[in-house]
Length: 307
Image: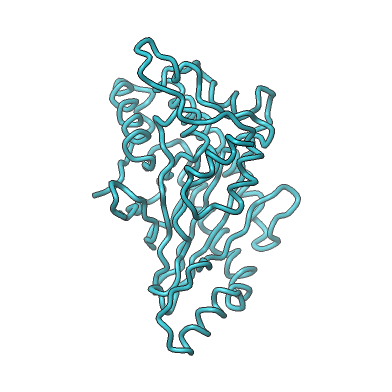
């Protein structure tokens, strides 16, 4: 079983209706799919791969060797224990923030600023597809994320590496979770696997497709769509070979944005769809998520609805 791969360029041609249907299926039945021919130049993607890999080698690798997961796994192995490290991830990760850029390699900032600009445009196109497929006005989701004010939504990027692990059966690359925010766009490693999603009770691999962008939806899209587009559990496996590179970008609501099911999706003519999700401020949800990321999402919805 493989997650859908969709040619995004066909959205503007004669196969638009078929492509919209494929995208609807990706959102409704999978929660994860891959876009090819998405409009981001392969030359730029090649530079992104290069600068992120070089940044890890030049600025991150030594630090990871002395990190807590490495120390904990070493202690576990030396103690001849087969107990799994449940509360640690075999991951090196940092978040890109304006004003705080890695100094090496020198072209890192310029490349990633360009990449983020292109990726944000793609994210907004994907949200317009969701609007249309859900029968919402064009720009509805973007407006909801902005808190009905211009340019308040948050677009962040995390650069992760999952180095070779000597005992991958004893530690997670990244523990299973659903994403808190809106639309997630992942540029994953071309060669080193490890990402899995939970589909119909079974963990399945997200196959590697060179220069594709993996799309998945977070908890806020589940709420806005009143459960039509559910966020999906996913995880990263630690692996004995290869250093998996993973660049995830998040188009999230403003912390002040009020999130609730779109009214049009609550009271259709048939009156058969009830409102199963609360109305809340995204910042309040994030306060709960910070302590419950690796737990089921339903209690988070209940808790934030009670605040």
